[in-house]
Length: 124
Image 1: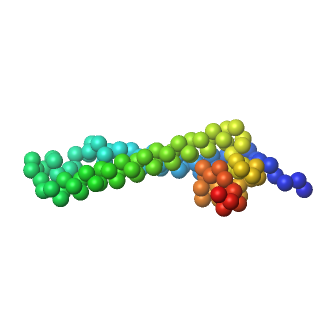
Image 2 (image 1 turned 90 degrees about the horizontal axis):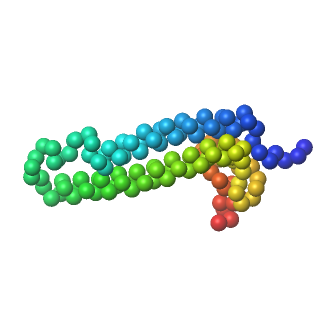
């Protein structure tokens, strides 16, 4: 039997559903992070007191910086998931970009935006 070179349409549909669910969750988390950065929920020490302690201010700034970093990572994750959807549309999803072999389903279920097989990752 010849080695399989791409996933079937049914398998691609399964991965698409998985990615869409992860994408929805990631977008919700990004919105929460953006809200924290922009203070749009209004629950900050600035709302309750015109003067606040230096430590509280520092913690607030640090928290916004952390939220900013997390938001950047989340945005990048969303971009990777959207790129994976493009590969599904093009029917080349799940093919390692270095070896040209199929990435195992187990890996794609764990990391649905993966473009490298474990074999290729280990060679790096």
